[in-house]
Length: 494
Image 1 (cartoon, rainbow, N blue to C red):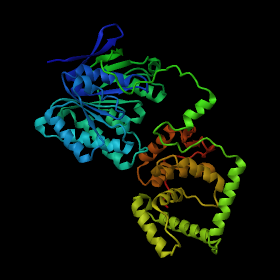
Image 2: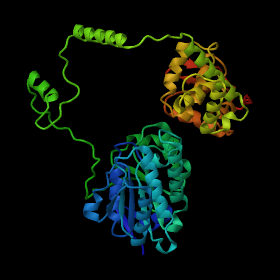
Image 3: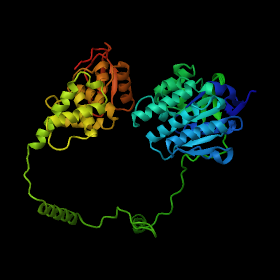
Image 4: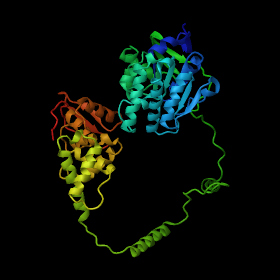
């Protein structure tokens, strides 16, 4: 039996339909910038196919919970424990109930872990309950990122593995992945590559337009068309859609999403300045007073109060003998210990936890005064030590700027950025792929190139090549630039 799902109208006025059985076998990828109409498209698809196939929507923003009102979906709140989510996923397959996995209110790490547990529960169900199911993942770049980001590595690994299982091995288990993303460049390629049907909406970045054109078999010069698409307009291609790229305008939906854009409304009549201040600073009936009150004390009064506080603290504090050289000697000892650790041949390839234990042992052997630095500080010092920075080679003020910029990156990437920053500051050649890989703790040159692409995508650096093929890295936030260096040069062995 062939089931056709009406999703809107084609450019020639005919109805645009999806072959549901073909969709279950070949999966679907939706791409479009924020505001292009991806959620509207997914909602239309869910509403039209609800009578024919079981559905599961992984919803990071709680936008699709309203499907429960008119289409019988059960909302699964992911705030419970992981074991419960796995059991619920098994029951969902066993009893063929359509659900919305609501991840709203969780941070990124917990969203990734909850989605991984639930998807794995659907995937690992007994063979007897492998009924067809559409598994829709909105904002799929959160759960299958192309590179490490703000989430911890373990959560990212679990989520990426679950998404890979869904798209690569889910078909035989009846699971048909429908994934939507804002940017193809942010989505893991091995996940995106398993889709055979595509609906590409409005996008503006050249790299995403080019990839969308490649997936649809369009010429590069036609990629500009994606920039001019209206909201709710997509270009579709695939076995379930059509054999050639064709514009599709998505039809109306019955349910209303909670994530719709706010509409402009007139401002209320503005009260007098005194009344407006009272609305902000004066608590209403039954409301606790806000901590931030309007300033009433003069600057002179505040300074006098601070002076009195310092005098009182000085009078109450017992006199202590201050050793002006203790801190300098302690920092010098820490730097020497860090240098010794990094100098070990295999230090770059050991986990941070093992290096930190070695560091604590060395601190005790050296009789380091006071408490040893904690793990977060050790990570920062390790990144600087891997970059090979010493006080004689760089100016302290310049290097402080570099460390401030690096603080915005994930901890495991900071050492790579500082390695490049040191080369740029000293006008040295750009580090090779081998040197970058070693600073990250891997032997893979390909991983080194992906790290540079990751930082370039986020605006921390810009890569270019000269006529000889040597790489030049520019750091726009610092105004520095490396000398040309060949990516395939031999890495330092340390």
